Structure formats: structure tokens, C-alpha cells
Image 1 (cartoon, each protein chain N blue to C red):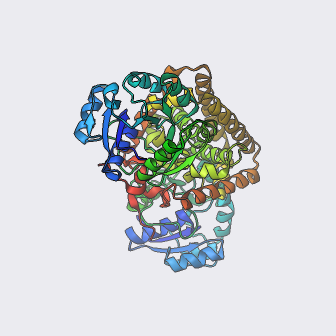
Image 2 (image 1 turned 180 degrees about the horizontal axis):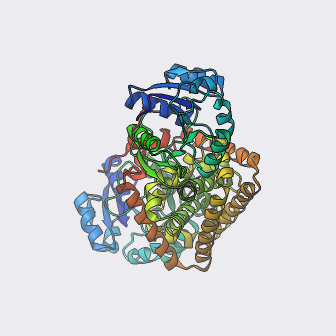
Image 3 (image 1 turned 60 degrees about the vertical axis):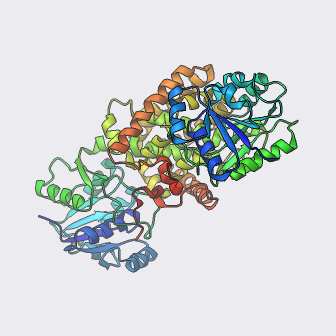
Length: 304
Length: 304
């Protein structure tokens, strides 16, 4: 079993990348697409993100074997309701949202009786909109599937094969664990980055111009993910509130401990902590989840 | 006035880059170098970081017109004392440390009567040691000079010209303001990154393997600067304690406000905050202080 007719709902960074990756890796499949924003639909048509752009979600899914919802997690319920009337009975509905318990609940309520397997490709850039997508976004990235207990094994296998065809590696876990893992590897880092960029832009003793000018000291790394889509991230924090607040609590405890070490001048504790964190970076690079070039290869400076 | 004989004390990322940049951009100058670690001296000689490696700091500076101290800020006083006996009376002593009030004080005490103009090139990567340096590190980066009030204008001009020759843009400010600006653009980001990487590696519900595997969700950006040299950063936090603690206080207040917005479900506040932070990123890229490619150009994915 493999999906030949795929509908992509939402044509921003993720939806556009799904469409382009299908075109690149699944040449036998045909794709329909829809976005609530007419300007996005027009631009998606120009870029050829999917084979056919439809004027309604209902129209886009009417012949689909697989529907991939690529809208902010807060918009999943409404998007699902829009297509409920024309959704074929045997179609599989999936998504790419960053929180999985909330999405599973929203989709199950909006589409009773339909097959639903939520998914989350852990991939992205700071760009958004119909110009942001690209076919290789999922290469070497992990895609996490969170099937409900009664999921059809054949559909689960087909969805795994779909993501693997797009270049991803697939992992299956339950939605609650996904939400905890992503709270620490994605949601908390985004929240911290948004916070520090806000803090830096709102100081009386240091101008915003100075912050920008001297950002190469470390600050600029945070600004990349703090440039991510505000709607998407608002929804993620509200949808995965409990896990985010739990991770935030841990982070705050650890920050307080380092703050105290600085205040009392405990250099040994700082040194010990800073040494431990180096090993994590090495592992991430060894696993191919980041660019090994120093400084991310910025300016491509040679290492002669 | 320009410096023809330059001594570089400390041959890690910064010292090595200074040496190689001099070689690339100031072919008339001759360089001597010293590092407290014999293995680093041997490797520096192999890479040709400076023209001549000396066995003592005193020997390295004995004919110097400019001495650039490239050691952790906590080691400045000891390094200065080592070379005090042979330092020529008219030599200028400078450094590359990330905190400037503490360094100014340490150097003034260790080298009474000598000309001292502290400096801080705002540039670096997460690598350290004698293999980390490269000639183009300072290209397009800012170098901040913090001359004491009675600094010799001719020496200040010569030091400015030196850094401009190495590719940097030069700014002059007082040491206290430097320490405040860098606390927000560099020290706080490093502290936050070190904290979150520690938090993530020390959770009971999520394994370190999972954190590494799904790091592409945002976490990996933090690990880069949390891989920086532990000794250097321990010293920076202890040396610039007051400004770091002040910025940390601001950050914590802002984080608490966003935490509250999440807890009470105030999506508007989150959206407003996340929208504001996007503009900063744009400005940093416009000013040439970061790589404009999405995702830092990781994997060099095309944007077609």
C-alpha cells in the first residue's frame, strides 16, 4: 500500500516542502493543495508546490488517499472541519504539527470514524510562507509518528514509507512522550530565544543598534530561531502548555544554580558545568543532526 | 606610527587568529609568540601561527612594540607579571578579552607605568586551541577599544589601524559600557545556552539520546555556543559578574512574563512578542553580522 493521491492543506514552509519533496521523490504521486490565504495559493501555483491548487480544502481532499495538514496546530480543528464533508472514508489524515496530544484530540473530534495518524517531521528553518519550502528539508531529519492505539498497521506502514521516501528517518512513539521530548528539544529553546531577543531589544543602558552591531558575540545564534513564524509558535506554546511549563521550571532551577555560582564566585562549578555541555554538541554532529563546520560555516572561512 | 614587532601571548583560537591575520595582512611585521602549554607551543610552531615561538613570555616580548595578550581574562594578571621584567618601556600592551574593566585593572596593577589599551574583537567560534585559529576571523567583525582616559592618542590610532588592517571595524567606548553591552550580546547568551544544554542532558523523562536525536527542532542552535571553551567562559562570568547578573535579572523577568502568558493562555501577548523579535534578525543580517542563508545554510539546501 502506498499513497498515490495526496492532499496538502496549508502551503507554507512545511506544506510547500512536503509538496516539493513528493514531486522530487514520488514521481508517480499526484498532489492537490489548499491554503486559506489566496495570495499563498497564487504563489504556490507559481512555484508548483503541488500539481493542482484548489479553491477549497473540501475540493483538495475529495479524491485523496492521504491528507497532510500543514497548518499551525491551533488551526488544525478548523481545517479538519472544512474538509470533513468530502473526505473519502478510507483516506488517512496526518499532519506535521509540533505538538501531538492536542492535534490528535482536535482531529479525532473533527473527523470521527476517520483514520488519523498524527506525525511531526523535526525539521524547519526560520523562514515561513509559500516561498520558504524546499524539497530537501526532511533529508536526514527524524519524523515522529504518534499513532493512536487502534491505528491500522497497513496505514501506519504506508505513512512510514511515505516519510522515508521524502528522505526522513521515522520513529514511532506515543503522543505524550513526543510532547515531552519536543518541549525540551524545540519548544523551550524557542521560548528562551524569543525571550532573550526581547530582553536585548528593550534595555535602557544599551541601544538596539549596539545589540545588533555586537551580535556576533553569541546573541545572533538566538535570533535565528526567534525569527520563526509567530502564529505557529503561539499555537505550540498554548497547545503543549503543560510540558513546556515543566521544562521551563527545570531550566529556571538550573539557571538559578548557575546564577548563584556566579554571585558567590564558584568558578569550579561553572567550569564543571561548561565542560559537560561540550560533549552534547559532539554527539549531535556525530549523528548528523547539525553542521560540523565551526561557526556553522558562516562566511565559509577556511580553517587553514 | 605602526607596529612592526608584535608579540602574541596565548596561542589558542584568538591568539592563533591574530598571528595568522598579521601574516596575511601585515607582511612587513614580525611576530613572536608564547603559550604556557608546551604542546600548544609545539603545534603553533607547526602551523606557523607566529614567526617565532619563544619558551617564555619574557623572551617573546623583549623587542616588541605591541603585545597582544590572548589568554583567558582570569589569567591576564599572571601573564602580565611574567613579561613585566623584559617589556620595553615604550611598548603598547593590549589584549582580546571579553570583559574590559577587570582586564584594565589587572594590567594596570601588573604593569605600572606602561602604556595599556585593552581591546575586544567581537569574533569567535566554538572551537579552541592552537588548531582553531584562522586568518579571516576578524573580517567584518567589530573590535572595541577601551582606552584609559590618559591613553596616548598616537598609540590609540596605531592600535585602531592594526585592527583595521586585520579586517575589523573599530569602535571606541569606555570599559564599563563595553561590559554592559557585551553582557547582553555575548555573556548572557552563552550562560543561557550552557544552562539549557545542561537542563536537557539531565532529565529523567527524556533520555540524552532523544535530546540529541531530535535536536534539529531548535536545541542544536544552543549547543554550538555551549561548546565554547570552559576556562574562558568561567573567567568571563566571574570577571563581569555585576553586568551579567543585571542582565540575567532582566531576562528572568521577561521569561516570567512569557511563562505567565502561556499559563493563562494569553495568545495575543505571545504573538505580539514573537512578532517584535523578527525585526532584530533582519537588522543583524542587513548589517552583515550574520549569515542570511536560512538555517545558517546548513546542508546547503537549495531554496528552489
